[in-house]
Amino acid sequence: MSTLPAGANRRTLKRKAVVASTVGTTIEWYDFFLYNTAAALVFGPLFFGNNEVGGVLLAFSTQFVGFAARPIGAAIFGHYGDRIGRKQSLVATLLIMGGATVLIGCLPTYETIGIAAPILLTLLRVMQGIGVGGEWGGAVLMSMEWGTRKQRGLMAAWPQAGVPIGLASGTAVVYFFSGPEFLEWGWRVPFLASIVLIAVGLWIRLTVLESPAFAQVKTSGKVAKLPLAETLRTQWRDVVKALLVRTAEQAPFYLFTSFVLVYGTQQLELARGDLLLYLILAACIGIVSVPFFGWLSDQIGRRLVYGAGVVLTGLYAFPYFALLDTRVGGLVLLGMILGLVFHDMMYGPQAALISESFGTGIRYTGAGLGYQLASITAGGPAPLIATAILAGTGGTTWISIYIIICAFVSLAALLTMHPRDPALDEADFASEDEAGQDTSRGAAQA
Image (cartoon, rainbow, N blue to C red; front, side, top):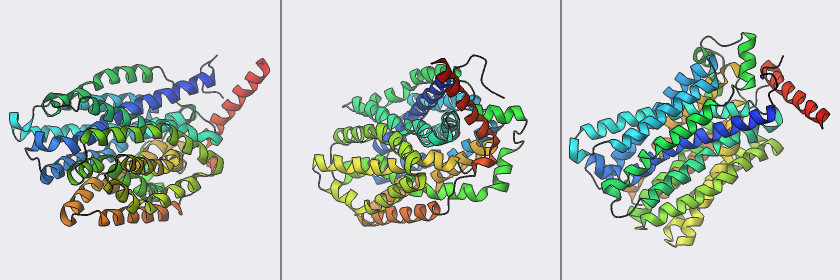
């Protein structure tokens, strides 16, 4: 039985779901990456009263708090997303994330209110982490579950493209306001601008329908009573695999996008504006490469595309810093671009690779939890580890070795991952049958 409204055109509804997921994800990652950039450049002196390495470490520590909060968001919104629906959870995560970002732009600094400034900053970073932690699972599933099995990689990759779009737009706004008054008030503008994005994203998300796969689960009465408990009881191994397989994607990514600003400005004495511009250009390529690698995974297999990205990232660990160390603009840009392209080879197929390990009834919880736990083990610690290594050794050799270790961890996890048998998911059949019916009706009308 169809779960679509009478007279509804599936193709149009699918397009709206993809747009809603991608736009919302872009806004949330804009907010999240904005903090990362500010932590690398200004939060040390503004909120901790420290311009040296210690200030950067303290700023990255608050950044890590946001990562630690992401699994909490995944558990909370995974529960409601698997119980009530993907749409409602996505509206809530957008409001939480956007609200916290706007408030950061209003915060008084350490000079004004003392120790209360970093405390409030940390609390708002926690709210950001909870918001983005609940966002990912719902966004990729809202898009993926509107597609057929043969296009899951591409459909799930569109919301993933929100990462490079959010990174490019957030960095671009910082670049635009990075003049002489950046430390005084310019840094606030990108955070306050988020209020406009929230309004746009909220309007778009309120117009989209629930995914047909989840609607079928709800209609059949097979909604999990306690999705988190069921996930940990029946598929905890898949959660761990998802966590580990992200290591080579997650840790190097934050070295390539956040730590590079610290290393480039403080160690190599490169111009902040130049580095921000290079990062914008590198991120823009991801707007195309992330969906492309998602599509490619539909053609030749997710594990093959993902594995290639893992291996290339490991091999690139030493050449990456060698290119940066030249201090030659073109080579530095090339180094940053290649790092993100190799990341995109993993990030494009990643959403489908992880999500296909879980059944529709607990997919939001299982996929989201596995994905976000890597924030604690890989993404969050990475800039801290790299900054500490650089301060302790004065070089990047051990940072490169750290990247290689991450690649080995991901490759081992990838070899143990296998997609769930579609025959176990009745909802997938329902979703695919509806797509086939719509295609047949369209052909008949033509």
